[in-house]
Image 1 (cartoon, rainbow, N blue to C red):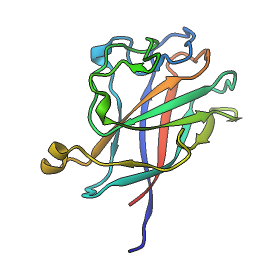
Image 2: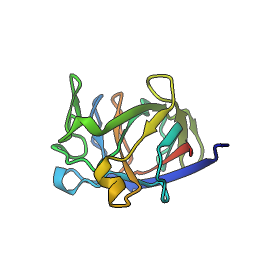
Image 3: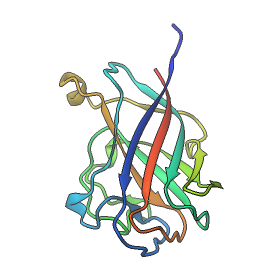
Length: 172
């Protein structure tokens, strides 16, 4: 059985401010926890696991200074206790309701910039691909979604209403 490569995409626009992030702060679409919309990736009817090999982050801002991020992939929609610029990772205690659905993380440093944006790519923090299996309830309901949250890994100063796009290189 040969594996096919495909790319999944999700994006968001962060709030209209330029408040600097500290390391481990959530980068999201809203400063209110209940209004944060996690990145949603549609695996397109996958009935088996999806393997994520690489993550690419594109952003509309051109600054490369401290532009490094961690992508957290989850197999179930999380409920958050913080919004944008809130401390998401406090000594490995994440601001989500259930850590059992965390599948893996990818560190991405934005290393290239052009006139209208910038991008970077990274691999799993464990050095191997990340396998995402839907929780049994999702599989039984026919769901093929998984989710992502982005955190800053350095003191990053964003552009106001900066747009982030995350692309995942996957195998099925």
